[in-house]
Length: 198
Image (cartoon, rainbow, N blue to C red; front, side, top):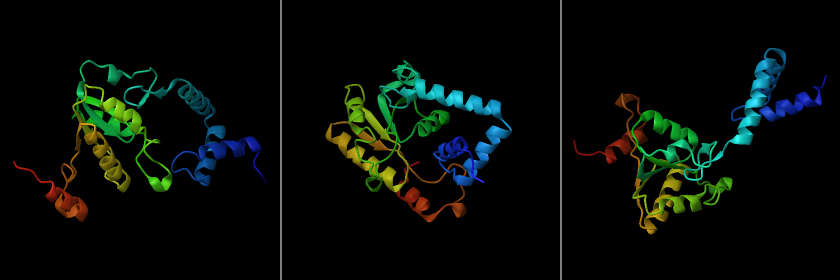
């Protein structure tokens, strides 16, 4: 027996989510239709509203409902510091850590030539304009410690240094509360190389 075409379309639409394969999408679709129609309506409404209202902040490129987000408008933030991140989720983690009081720029990805993601796709032109606005004194490159994140940090650092903007990179090493015996050798080696005076 074949599913109705609208059900097949729903299943296919759910597969666009990361980590959702055909079986998971089918389970979700059946659950929404069979057990949680109010939840399905709420999901459809929230998604529709988000697509209609959410856009990129003109300053930090993260998601916002206004032209400029509340973080970028805050007079309490240090406008001389600009932290460059890959995703809005990374921004949320930085805010939760309460270790940084500057402003942000979210790239919405990382350089990955094999995937067709170059400087234009991660808005480097907007980042350069933002970093060279005459207010920013230091950019903190907080991209992930993946091959793509490292390549992005290096590329952006060179680009900004050529414009006379100080570029620094977040440190990496052992996690707080981590035990040496449970840390991978690459992380341990990096922690030793990036040691500092106490």
